[in-house]
Length: 89
Image (cartoon, rainbow, N blue to C red; front, top):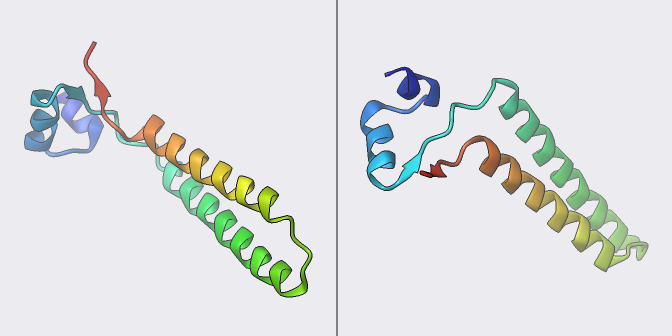
């Protein structure tokens, strides 16, 4: 029961994960959601900057695309590290 509580999942959801061969992660810390919100804000700012830069012709599209892809990977890595269940070893 302690592991179920730490995961923040219902007992039935926790058991379904175990049956499917994965061990749920502990629930993320409270500041996780603030970090994700901040990262999404960065992404929105990048998009806005790109729109303005495109209007004036002052953007390196390749570098911008790389930066956006890096941000996307960082978001996915954070989600994976904090929330996704892990395979049983």
